Image (tube, rainbow, N blue to C red; front, top):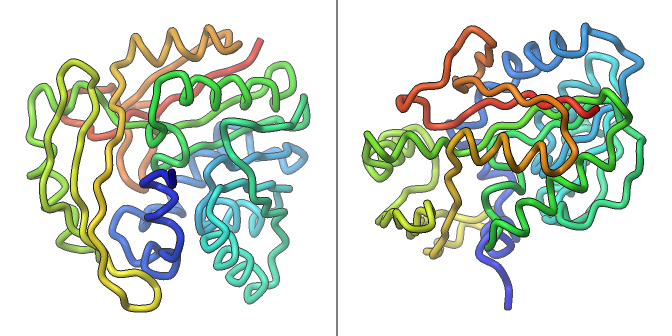
Length: 254
């Protein structure tokens, strides 16, 4: 059976790049650079790289980047964009649950729900974290954003997504948050790259900070720091609150 995220990204790349939540790339890459002291020798793995926006920008700044994603369509568009700009990125089709890298990278990034939180089970999400830990060298870092489980305790997810959709191309037609699993079940309407309209049932996992800390430390990370995530303006100064839709995580391997 084809998973909902595979259906969504089967032909949704150019349209994806028009969404409001992809507009913060420059500021987000500024934060990433600061976290690795702007050391151009650091090798970077972008997990769930999608259309390659972070991978391409980091490669433009002089870093060696490998981007992996499950969507052939998004990777094709990423390669096309990189080639048009004369930028070299090693884009590979791969399942984030089954990464085969071993001690090859100094930094991994997994941003904007790239792979993580989309998976059907917590075990699958944990597999992704384990694979990233294996891919990193000792002392390597993971910079990740994921859905903040504190947010739906105080806010309507549906109202937030409806407001965000005003500047994008997809819309959320319904949401139902399951308090027993911390999963949001929704129906989204979107137009693919050929102009065809679709409706799709989706569900995503929200995590609270102690869960993420436990998962990451169990996966092999020695330290885990969690902050609030703001689009295009990641900062260690932002203490996580229930008003942040996403949390920003910086974890370091032992």
